[in-house]
Length: 188
Image (cartoon, rainbow, N blue to C red; front, side, top):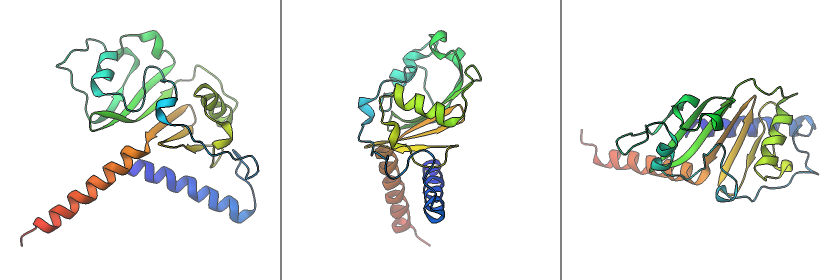
C-alpha cells in the first residue's frame, strides 16, 4: 500500500513541477490527454496473470501445483517456477500481492531481450497490447502512470506494475479500522 502512495506522490509531484514550469508532461499534453475508463476485468491477462484472480488460480500456473502449496501474501516468482516456461520467457521475475486471497497487484520485470529505444516506446507498446488509451499516461517519461477506473498501471524501464486501486482502498480502510479498534481496546 505504501508503494502505491509513493508512486502516486511521484506522479503528482512531476505533474506539479511540469505545471509550474509551463512544460507539458512528456507522455500526455493537456490537449491530447484522454481519461482511462477501462476496468481490470476488461484488459487481457498478462502472461496468465490478471488482477482479481484467486490464489488457487495462480498456484495452478506453478510447477507441482497442488492444494498444499500456499503462496505468501506477497512475494516473487521466477520463470522456472511456472509450468509453462515458454510463456514466461523474457521475464526475470514476477512480484505479486494478494488481498483477501485475490491478486491485488503484480509487477513483471522483463530481461534485456528487447531493446526499447526508451521507456515511452515500451509504455506505448504495453498500452496498445492491453487495449488501453495511450493518451492516458501521465507523469515523467521515465515512469509514466495511468489511472483507470479500478486499477493503476505504472511503466518503468523494462518493468510494469498493475495495482487494484479498489483493493488498496479497502486495505487502507481495514488498517485504519484495526488501528482504531486497538486504540479503543487499549488499557494502560
